Length: 222
Image (tube, rainbow, N blue to C red; front, top):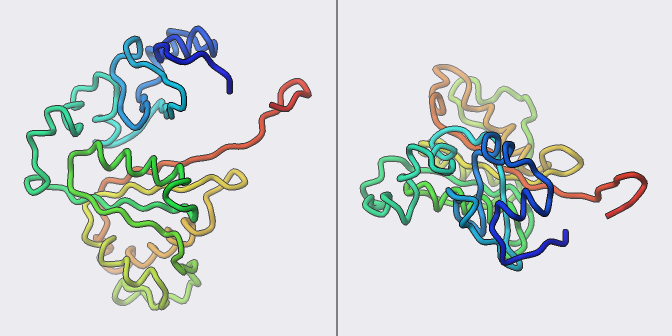
């Protein structure tokens, strides 16, 4: 996409791309520019090579802290959250990168990392790249003890999943669906639902995704 840079985010979206100012003000609630949340679209400057993420609704404490001028924006690192040390943070977040791409070229890795870094809480980041994780085979071996009996790379991740207080799970969109690796990973969470089934009950979760493709309009490809 060609656009004039060195301008405000508001100029880029409304003047250059034709998004209505009312839509920007009232509908777009979360703006992340170059990995940082934006509170004022008129002062945020778009540079050459900038990356941009927009959301109408991003749930839980993450969405509340990212929301422009939100009431709990102080949870962001670098703001009032800088007064909260990692040791004092009460929440442990598990970040999952479901992309098979290398870190340097993975948009999913960048997006999950951005969310984690702006929570001000302690976190651990795990990538599924290179891991062998099969889907659920419905053997019901987990019914009695909530532990999956398939022996693959998910076994070592189970304690991390069980001990985390919240999750940020990112995946690429392939053919308008979740990629197979992340889908298999999530299928195996079936093991947590039996007996008391409270291992994950009430925990916060955020899902983020990356997708792209060729657009067609009036017979033109661009």
